[in-house]
Structure formats: structure tokens, C-alpha cells
Length: 470
Image (cartoon, rainbow, N blue to C red; front, top):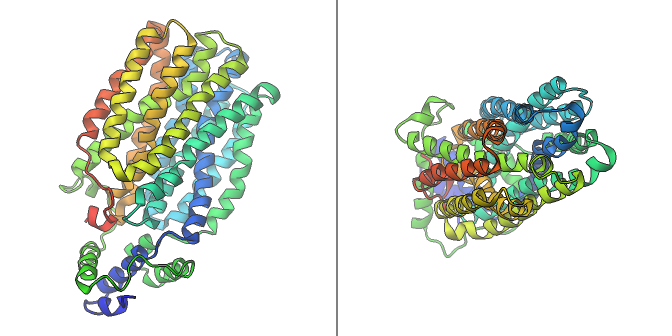
């Protein structure tokens, strides 16, 4: 086994120690320590997704109960995403300042407590407020969790490791769909929120007990704490990524990249997102988040209500047909997890925007005929686009350095929240004024923006985080 201490001693402290610790992170393959962290943080992401979609499956009941108009439906759906916009920005900053684990703990606590509040909201106004505040927690959890998991990952196989973690998000949407189709008709819309909120309180405690991201600790100069976490990772397996067949030249080459990223420990700054190095990355990833989620969440949040109001299907059948999109999405994301390291992030995103746009264009011409065309074409378009929305949680943390990874990811995901808030409201307006076909044509046109942005992505596959982002 290579003596990393000998290599580290050939430079000066603290650069050598930072490089040495980062090298040790890359040197330990995925182990049971990583699995535990992924499962616990993944549980939070599961209930994040569940809470995000819960209103969509309660909405068909609320429409009749509160006599909601299409515009009011859109506004109520948008409430959660407006809160998520604020949460993504706020908790991204908190995660950079105070750590990934404290920030994630707070977000899950907020979304769980406010989920209980949603269940006891008795009118439109109270539910709007509860969903808005809950959205703050929902919006903060996913980007912070994405930064945390990304920082535990290594260059080789990072796509599969991360995407298998992110698979929990479409599974959360799938869980919400299946629970909604069963629970809402039998027990009432209130239980839809309680099912997602109560387990979240347990997850909050489990996240609180997680180890902090060692990469974040290194970036803050807290080397002793980072080393204790790395020792736990190393103790969880006897395997290492390097063996005696690697020569000193290869080790020095890898350390040089890490050392270059470690020489200046800058404080996180919003301004650096728009520096010469990161300006292009930032603007492109914003377009990707906004366009993909405008389509995905616009479709997913409205499908149950479209089946109920446009095609006049019974409540249970509407919810069951709406759940098909989330079944297909979970399968598509699983496929993406095993292929994304082979195809690359850029080519996968381009293909998804092309295919989803084509399906939506066809649907726009036949949507007035039958709800089955919406279920087949609309659900398929959502599933294809869903792989890109999940992959962006892999790609975005990769293109920023540790010192601003959570801020960069949080700000990027704020565009998904803005787009997800705008989409339901715009669907309500377009549906009322122009009909169902125009809704899907609007989504098809949006995929053109995403395709343009995807052609300008940088490729990050199988490159170390320190190599991608100086």
C-alpha cells in the first residue's frame, strides 16, 4: 500500500494535510459507511419528494370541497414552490456557513412539522400559508443533501453512486402517488399530509446524528475533525482504490490536482458564481433547472386534476392513472443510474430533451381525444424528463468547488422552484383560455430551451471534484 504520509510530507502544511485528507477520501471505495449515510439522507429526500407531491393528490378532493377555480388550483400548487425558492437560497447559505448536517436537520424538521399543519388547515388561506412554510424546508433539503452526498462520492462511478441515491426522489413521488390513490378516497385528504410528515420527525433525529461532510470540514480548515470522519470511513472497509502497482508519478499527479484546489481556502461568495470561471456554468445550469422542472412539475402536479376536471373521470381512477407517470419515472431513473457514467451527463440530457419534446408535441395534437393518450404520452414524457431533473442533482454539485457547492446548488435549484411555481399557475391560465392541447404545446416549446442549454454543458463523468472545479 502506498505511504500517503510520505507523499504529503513533500509539500508544506496546511496544503499538504488538506491534499492528504482529500486523497484518503478518494482512496477508500464505497463501503457500509457510505451506504448508511446514503440511506439516512435518502430517507429525508424520500419524504421531501412525498411532501412535494402530496397536494397534487389531495387537490381533486379540495376542488369540490372548497369550490376551487383553475386559477386558485394553480396558485395553491405554486405556494409550496414559492417557499421552496426561499428555502433553497437560505439553507444553501446556512450549509456553507454552519455545515451540511445542521442545515439538513433543520430543513427536514421544518417540512415535517408544517406537514402536520397542512393536515389541520381548514380553508384555502391556511393551507396556502402552511404549504408555503413547508416549502421552505422542502426547498432547502434536496440541494443540501445533494451537496453532502456528492462530497462523499469519488470520481470513478460517482454517477451510479449518486443516481442510485437520487432514485429515492422519484420513489418518493411514486410513494406519494400510490398512497394518494389509496388513502385519499378512503380516509380523506388530511391523511395524505400526515403520512409524509410523521415519519419525517424520526428522520430528522437520524440526520442530526450523521457525520459532517469531510470535504466541507477540510475546506473550513477543520482538519482534525475531518480526519476523524475519514478514519470512520476507512475503518468500515479494508479495501482501497490504489495498490502497490501504482507508481509515485501517478500519485503525485493526482495529489497535484487536489493541492491546486487546496492552496487558497476562500470563503463562500455569491459573487464567485459569476466569475470568469463559473459564469457560463452558472447560467447554463440555471436554464437546465428551469426548463426541465417547468415541464416535469407542471405535468406531474396537474395530471390528477386534469383527469378529474377535463376528462371527468371518477376520483379513484383519476388518481390511479396519475400514478402511472411516477411508476415510469422510477424505472427511467434506475436505467439512468446504470448508464449515465457510460453516456455522459451532456449526451443524456440532450437525448432526454429531444425525446420528451417529441412526445409532448404529439400529445398536443391528440390530447382532446382521450385521457389514455395523456396517460401514455404525457406520462412517458414526464418519465423521460424526470431522469434529467434527477441527474441535475448529480451534475450541479460537480461543477462547483466545495467552498460554494451548497450555495451554487441551492441557487440553481431555486430556479426549479420558480419554474415549478410558474408552471402550475400558467397551466391554469392556458387551460382556461386555450384548452388542453395548448398546455402540452407550451411544455413542448419549453424543451427547446433545455436542449439549447444541454448542448453547452461541460462533461464531468469520471473526473474528481477537485479536477472539475478549481
